[in-house]
Length: 113
Length: 115
Image 1 (cartoon, each protein chain N blue to C red):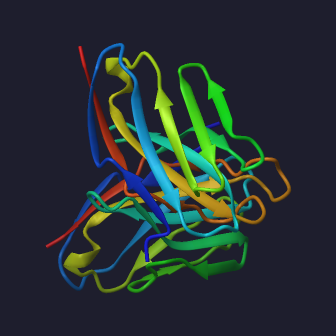
Image 2: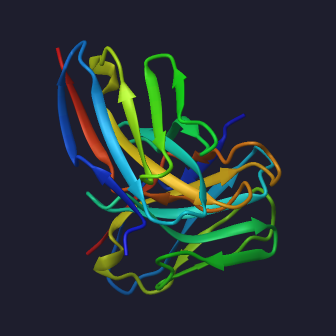
């Protein structure tokens, strides 16, 4: 049973466009929802994260939108740049800090110039 | 700070061989994790540790063993390598409990091939 479902699997966006990646979760006990960015040959790195007490969080060109009732959250990348080309993973966890993350399967984003 | 370091970067094993993947962190994190990443499958948790001397199984522990004798080190042991263990392995660590977030810091990974 996949607890975190991510879509699409791959995405191609023109430079300057908006990239949108969606995730859905099943466990209502989850209370921490991060997005990780991974470049080829590197480990994932935290991009932005949200807790369910807010509906949106923005950091620069990256925004998380969170819909608690629908059990969905999404990553929006505004003004997408070629340097944003990477694999993006959504994740979820519950309980105290340090609890293991449940990852989605990832989205490979290519931003064409 | 070097963060999370992993050795080796690459390794080719023959079926039935054993090896240890090394992981060290210098951030004084209590929590450490081992994940495997397969193409199109995301990251799956193998084992994790909440502190020295304490380890627990994750989602896919079969064929692996871990130990945690110090805060800094969390080695992953493969006893009898199988082709199904061909993967990229990531070690990660996170802050002590009670902090506001749960950021996990990942190492650069070990790419393992079992032939």
